[in-house]
Image 1 (cartoon, helix red, strand yellow):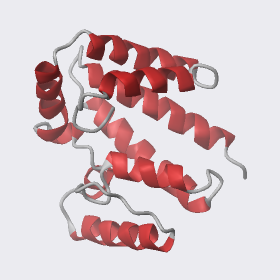
Image 2 (image 1 turned 120 degrees about the vertical axis):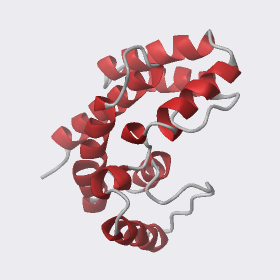
Image 3 (image 1 turned 135 degrees about the horizontal axis):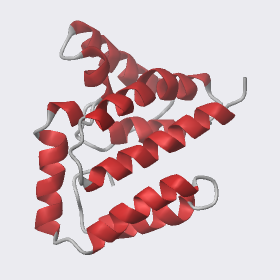
Image 4 (image 1 turned 90 degrees about the vertical axis):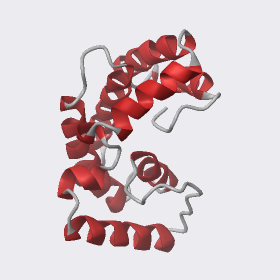
Length: 164
């Protein structure tokens, strides 16, 4: 749901909503809200909202590295280290996005065991702080706010149940 809208976005929202329902009911409701919106919104308007939200609003850029380091040398170093970790773990992303794009990071985390210290560090030190910053930038009524709030709730729930 956090990629540029494609024809399958409604089905992805539906599947996500159902998968979250048992363990993360609050997140499931937020995704359900987005699903209903996506289901009743023309594709062109959904694309316009996505672009206005994530591409044109720096507060909501979907690059956690940007939120943590800005456009600096440190972000470049972070990107290089991410790419190295991706290679070491055998993760290949077929997206043309940078290594710190939210969907790429989430795909990587999903590809490694949740108890892996790297997964926990990326959630705790990268994704959660960046998502907090991004959530501050949403205008009222933006349907993507619910998606990011749901994601933040799930990630915070994961770090609370992570093994010590």
